[in-house]
Image 1: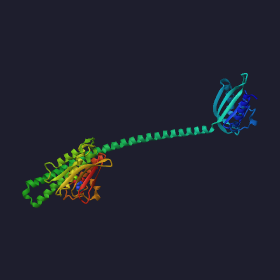
Image 2 (image 1 turned 90 degrees about the vertical axis):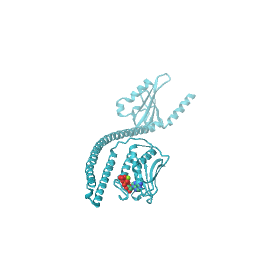
Image 3 (image 1 turned 180 degrees about the horizontal axis):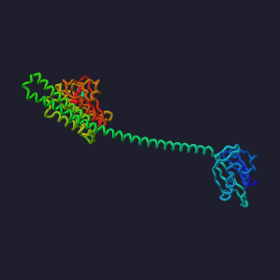
Image 4 (image 1 turned 120 degrees about the vertical axis):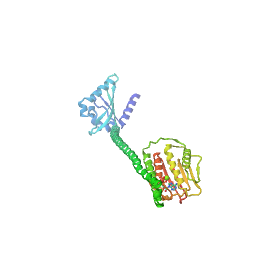
Length: 393
Ligand SMILES: Nc1ncnc2c1ncn2[C@@H]1O[C@H](COP(=O)(O)OP(=O)(O)OP(=O)(O)O)[C@@H](O)[C@H]1O
Ligand SMILES: [Mg+2]
């Protein structure tokens, strides 16, 4: 045996042992001439039963009817090599996804001597790909459905928001009209009462005895209080609809200006020490709204220290959890801390009118302004030793 002969024997015995590929020879008509172990495993026939059979046995009835097996051979003859992937039938009738390569063979004289056919079973990969494809399609369908749902939800949300905005706009307008008529219609009779009471005191003083004068003065005082109440409640209701403009506000300066205005010419004759901390960061906010807010806090500090011999009001800021907390602190009478959350509600007062006058609206205005700025406020008082109001903007 020459070297080439022994090589070809060796390679054919190697081929016969390969398990993962079906490798076999076909003659020019497509009849099976050789059969390896892989072919037996993949196609399901042993060599005795298949050798001599035509390879079209591996194709489905439909493929055979279409003449596909012989088209493959014709194509291999023409081009030298054909590659195909399709479902094939095993001996037991089950399907498998085959990757097939058919290559033409020539004899020494250069004539076509047959074909070599190599088949690999790619069923698992094929099923995995199909499964992945199905998952992808399902996912795409779900995404499409969710997107459609979201678009619908968004449209209905937009509709609701638009409706609510319109409703709010109408309510706001009604409120403005209501506030306007309250201020005018309620103030007119009050003016009349205080006007006529004034006439009583001035033009009919002789006809009134001491009791009558006290009663009339009490009427005038209460009318003023009623006017203040109306004025404050109006201010309180107007804040919500007021446009807010954000600018950089020098808080130290604003505290000082508000203090100067409050303790100006008409300030009662008493000494109150005012300490403003040196370093106070600027804030972002509406300076005229913040001025109203600060004036209310300072006027409370002034009012509730009136009984102290040496009254002290301190304002400043501190950093707490990376936030600037501004504060107004006094050494006045303080308040019962149990009710500290109540202070910011309209008409809630923790002190008697005879001790400290007021309408109970100031802190409600303060809180509305702070909330409009997106901030928060809280009050502290310990053992009635003064009060501190802290706020964040
Ligand atoms: N600095 C303070 N010290 C002690 N108590 C205070 C202080 N500030 C507010 N309070 C308590 O909170 C209540 C509510 O304050 P708010 O400013 O709303 O009303 P007011 O000052 O009584 O009246 P108004 O400000 O409307 O004239 C006060 O009546 C008082 O009981
Ligand atoms: Mg007040």
